Length: 143
Image (tube, rainbow, N blue to C red; front, side, top):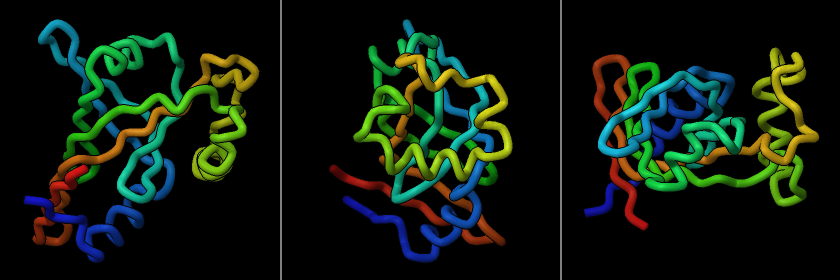
């Protein structure tokens, strides 16, 4: 059964996560889960983050693209997709949005945008649960 994200849940997701927000993505390697905090931005059923292509997170996603996410009264599963180098012409649209969302820290020297290992990770949601003011919104997105 496919249950899309309801308009009300989408509105809450955009309001809550359509800006710089801290999320905790979890990946699995050899049956052992790993979780960490990242800065993320939500748009149209996916979360985006800037990361390093050679990180454990990206190596684990290459082996198993299933990612679990947890944030402010929200948890979900998704499929991790490496969009490649932040500076790729194909990434210009989302990179521009990430520059705006992460404006407070994006150019603080932590990121090297000339390094092609500075990549964008997209986590495409497959299912999730969002809680807001006593209401539970569940969704499951089929491909």
